[in-house]
Amino acid sequence: MLALVLKPTPLQNRESKLLLASGSHTRRHMLDNAGLEFETQSPDVDEAPLKQQGLQQGWSASETALALARAKALAVPAPGAVVIGADQILSCQGQWYDKPADMAQAHTQLMALQGQTHILHTAVVLVQDGQVLWEHVAEPRLTMRPVTEGFVARYLAFEGPQCLSSVGAYRLEGPGIQLFDRIEGDAFAIQGLPLLPLIAALRAIKVLQA
Image 1 (cartoon, rainbow, N blue to C red):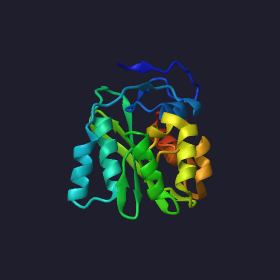
Image 2 (image 1 turned 45 degrees about the vertical axis):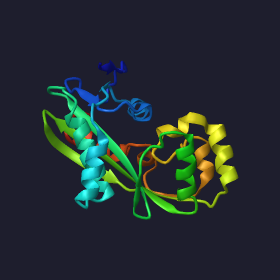
Image 3 (image 1 turned 90 degrees about the vertical axis):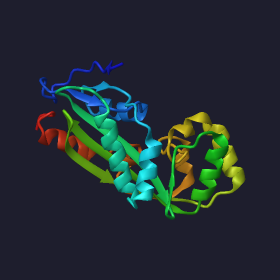
């Protein structure tokens, strides 16, 4: 079911239809705060086979994230609308990570990432009537400080199940910031959407006014 975000804006061309193919509250919040009027729909895409295909065919994490973003945008039936698809893959030391399934997996994942630099391969695409109009991938790098198992346990107890909504098991906009020594790259991309390149692309195709 489509969920209409009722926020009229004079910055958007009224004849343009925009749809976010994602169930992510964070992505929806980012676009809403940026003054966009759009609808949302969660795409019915099984990510596991696409990720497995990427690994088998030697795709990079960024190439796989783009393939997933395309698949999500193309899976949503929205005639005439410009559809935003997005995906994010975390890679560290050659290994890819998914969102943790439970708190125990979140603990294991954070212990694997602590003291290391990881990359968030954050892809976004624009699709209209089955045609890819534009695509982009950002690769912010995040260095997690060395932490003990005790600190991770206390962090997870404080953060709770919210951490399971992030591929890294942390929210930088929350207490997860305490896990890090250094962050390089697009802060919006870390949250799941390279917002500035996306807005520029929407201006270029006349969805947003210049």
